[in-house]
Image 1 (cartoon, helix red, strand yellow):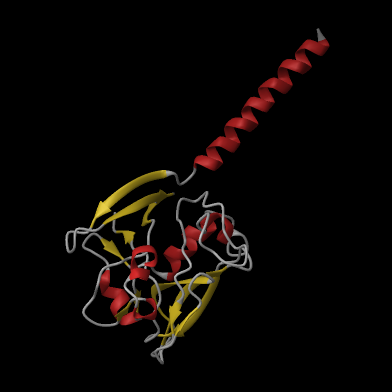
Image 2: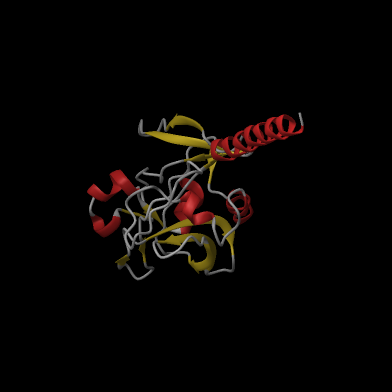
Length: 204
């Protein structure tokens, strides 16, 4: 009888652990879509905790402060446009906004914090240096590179950079970055005329 009890207890424990692991792996997989009425482009979305994010980089062509990587429109299909901070603050469609530094922090903390979240947030393919992630977040972070403030493009396929709406000082603003070398999400400041990717978060 004792052996039977222990066996049943272990089975129940295994079931509980399996359900817990399933719950973790299913976290953030509330996938949806949104169509931007300005140009008819449809974006995948993902609800992570209480936040709903676009699961693709924004690809709306703004009138200024907006660049295709290397001025090649073929790059927009996969990576979206790169935007200056001034443009990024206002480029998200109605009902969406450029996330603040605090909103980025909430997102990253859902996946273990800045030292490990990158692996869960990065797409499963497209990153050089064996830097692909697991994308268990559903966020699908892409290595869209950047445009330096002086106009040169860098690092497509190697890193991704996304603006926050939070200003650091008169010349600089906060952004988040990832590269193919590790699982870190880098929180840095950079000059506002630089060109970075944009992810919009829902107002609701």
